[in-house]
Image 1 (cartoon, one colour):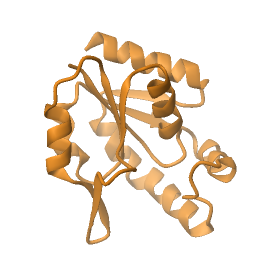
Image 2: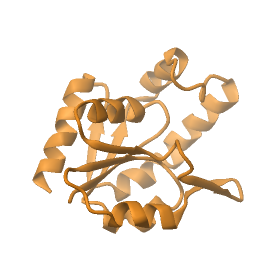
Image 3: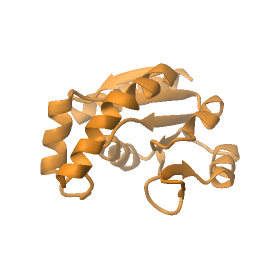
Image 4: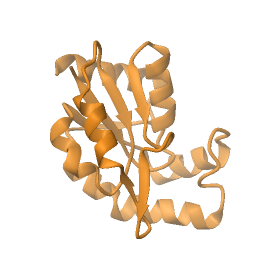
Length: 153
């Protein structure tokens, strides 16, 4: 069955998209929650045995996994699609300023780190992705585009 990775920088809307997919009945995993991530020398990495088990499990419907970690590329061949969610810097900064579901990005230092990641990490994600979606569009349109991607796989 289909597995889709949703990746991108903090503030692009990954969690909002994932929540809407879950609300519509899709299987979802937010790897920012629940022990999916370990730290190694300051890097965030997926616990590889957990991710292997998740991607090997049988499913009845598409699975959408959200995450951005240093070792995600090791799993790209296990996903049917790798979708980069992105937005312009000013949109990301406004979302970080106004979001209430996550405190990351509230401090000046965190925002500066996110902007460095946009410049340095996002190009790597873009190169490894199979699809790119600009999340300035309404949430419903972004989710519809992801469902269409899953239906093609």
